[in-house]
Structures are given as C-alpha cells and as structure tokens.
Image (cartoon, rainbow, N blue to C red; front, side, top):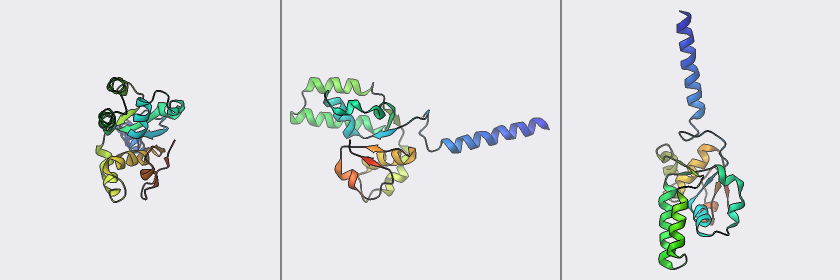
Length: 158
C-alpha cells in the first residue's frame, strides 16, 4: 500500500510540473529573455553592421515557427526591390537556420492570436501570443504593431 501512495505522489508531482510548464513552449529549458519578430531578424541578417548584434537578450530569444517563412519572404522582397543583393540574401538565409532563436509551434498560440485579429495581423498576433505566454517583451521594428491596442506583453522597438 505504501507503494501506491508513492506512485500517486509521483503522478501528482508530474501533473504539477506539467501545469507549471504550460506557459513555455515544448522543449524550453527556461531563460527566455525576449520574443523577436521577423522584422528584427531580417535587420540582423540583412545588415551586418546592425546595432541589434549588441543585444545580449537576442541570444536567448524565441519566435513562432512562422519566423523562417516571414524572413525568407522579406529577403525575397528586398532582392526583388534591389535593396539587398541576391548573394547577401542567400548568405542571410544560410545564417537563419543557425541563429540561436528557438522556434515555438503555433498550435498553442492560435486561440490568443485569433483574439487579437481586430488590432493586429494574424502573423503578428502569433508573436504577441508567444511573448504573452512566456511573459517576456516582444522586440519588433514595426511601429504599428508596437502601438496597437490589445497585446498584453511589453513591446519594444530597439
């Protein structure tokens, strides 16, 4: 009978840990300092002289998986507009996969992102929802997003 009590205690302990970890994306070891949106990452990758390289909090940042598609799209647009040379964009895409930005799945963010639909794009809302879930600031270069009503996280323009 004593074994049953121990097993029940372990189960209860696991449930408590699971509840405590719900705020973090799966696989998050903790220590998250910011959520970085695509505008910040594009700036980092496209401009080797960017002052954003000096931000230590970007070394422990998160973003939704959407980040890679948004960054690729933005770099493609810059190449098409002639503002970024194709070879520079190719190198940026190569570096994108190696950035220390951890990617979070979207599934747990969808409900909150939908709630924000009146004030921000669904894409931006995924970043906001992740920052809210992790209780960390969202870094963006998007002034409209920073000024939008509805988000409950701190939004910083570096």
